[in-house]
Structure formats: C-alpha cells, structure tokens
Image 1: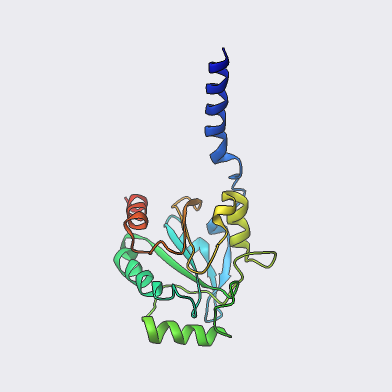
Image 2: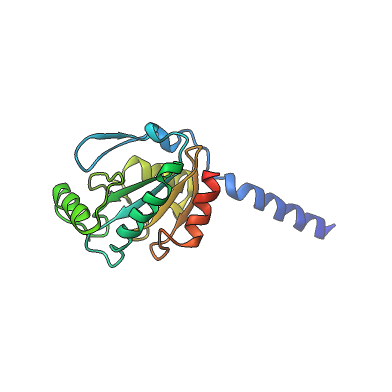
Length: 182
C-alpha cells in the first residue's frame, strides 16, 4: 500500500510540475516591443513561427554569438524561424544608446535579423515579455547573463530555455528548432 502511495505521489508531481506556472493568459505574440530604430515590433506579426529570443550585450564575452545568431537566421528564416536580439544593460555590459548598438551590430556582424531597443530583461523594470516568461515558465526563463536564450514555439509558448554558454548553432538548439519547423 505504501508503494502505491509513493508511486501515486510521484506521478502527481511529474504531471503537475510542467503545468504549475504555465497558465498562459497571454502568449508571446500578444506583446509589442520597440525596435532598435524606434519602430514598434508587433510580435503578432510572427504568429505561427518559432522565435529564438536572445538578450544581447556589446561588451560581453559571449558577444561573438551575434555571428552565430546571424548564421541561424540565414539558415532557417525561409522555413519560418525568427531570431530576435534584445540588447540589454541588465548586466552592465551594453553600449550607451541604441544608435551605438545598431552600428556595432551592423559593422561587426552584418546583423539583419530584428533587434530591439536596449531593454531590461530582469527585475522589476524587465520588459513585459520577460515578466510573462518568468510567470509562465518559472525562474529558468529569467536570463542569468547576457546571451541567454528563450525558444518560443509556434503556439507562442515557451518551448525551452538555454544558458549563455549554449551556442545558438549548437545541435541542442538546432535540433529543437528543426523539430518546431517540421
């Protein structure tokens, strides 16, 4: 009898874990964010497409990942993937203004995927996208450092998150992206 109780508790915990935070009153596509040029990016324009959201910084040791983000964008954009760079100074490693970030990205990495204005990604001043991510996916959706990645699926929900050390072109990320594009 005791073993059945333990098994029952284990099954309950397994199934309740994934849905405890994910109420999804809103989905990713319900938000808007300002582009680096000052235009509004309506995320509803990406509806039905997976989106890799990456908080970036110009002075970070991971800044070379911009090149890999561009490779990912070029490889999968025709299949529907959106790569969205969100420059942030939440870790005190970003340039002073949007124009400097835009020029840095274009000159050094020939970036042409969508990039937002400098945006807070953690704490009370975090953009609504990041507050939503934390509310629905828990602490694992809160960036721990620059170049933290959140993969949004075609339904506008969080599919997975990836640490800064995980390269955008790693098999771990590309396999998951390819499964979402199929």
